[in-house]
Image 1 (cartoon, rainbow, N blue to C red):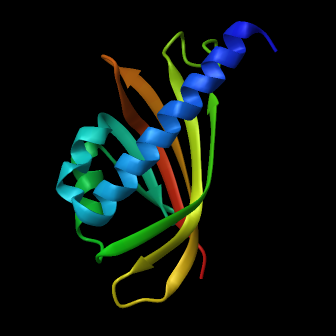
Image 2 (image 1 turned 45 degrees about the vertical axis):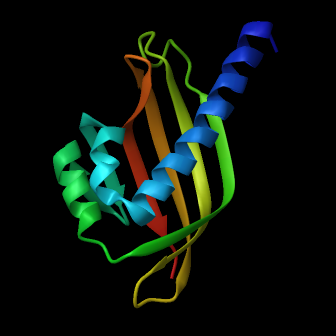
Length: 132
C-alpha cells in the first residue's frame, strides 16, 4: 500500500470516528441539529423507505421516538477519486444496538457516504436498517 493510500485511510478513520460520535449523540439528544450534517441533496433509505433532501430527512428523523444508540462496530474506507470525480469522500459503516422509546433493543446497521464540503464532512447518503 502506498504512503498516500495509508494517509487517506488514516484520515478516513479519524473522520469516521469523530463523525459517528457527533451523529449518534445528535440523533439521540439533539435531532434538530442534524440538518447541519446532511447535504441539501442527500438521500436516506430507512428500513427500505426512501427519503430525499435534507429537510425531509431531518423531519422524518425528528418524528421518530426518542432513541439510544450503542455503537459496537465502526469501519471506514476512502472512496477512490476516480469514482467521485475527485471529490474527497468516505464510506462509513456503523453497527450496534438501538432502542426506541417504547420498544425493545434491536441490532442495527447503518452506512454513510460522507463528502468533504468546504472542510466539513456532510452526509451525501445513508442507509439504516434494524433487525427484529
